[in-house]
Length: 176
Image 1: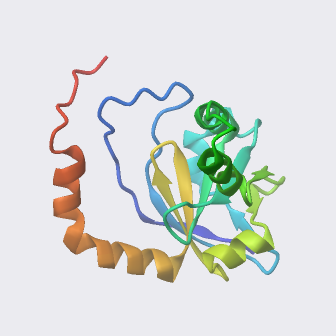
Image 2 (image 1 turned 45 degrees about the vertical axis):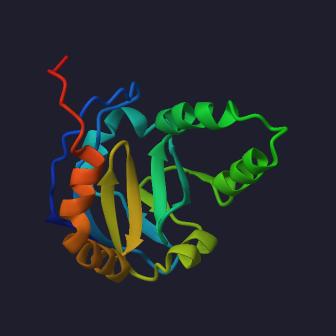
């Protein structure tokens, strides 16, 4: 049996978001993967993704961490539009496209509401049993729970500086 419980629930406000396919997701949840790599999508994410459930998702390796990224198909299609604009006669663009698409797989929820994480992606992310799903804007990061907690604990001390560097010069626009 696969259980998924709520550990943290965090709301984020994204200033000036121009995402057309969906609102930003929120929440962090701990789940368990079964022996086949199936993980129950948390109910809170199902509620936030109601419109996207039928179209399915895309799962890929994260670029900046040993984790996975899960995007609703519509969000993925919007993101890939920019990648597809790259000039394919520039070597570094071709290399980027190749690596960006490496390990990308379409996934759907089964009748029990579970996602199947392919073995190669589980190996990449170091996932065995304990999984953390964390909202990340318009997608979900999927981590081995110990790796996620280590990343968060190691990053907490630098977050104040990071927040100032990244968001300090942005003036929130009035709600549209």
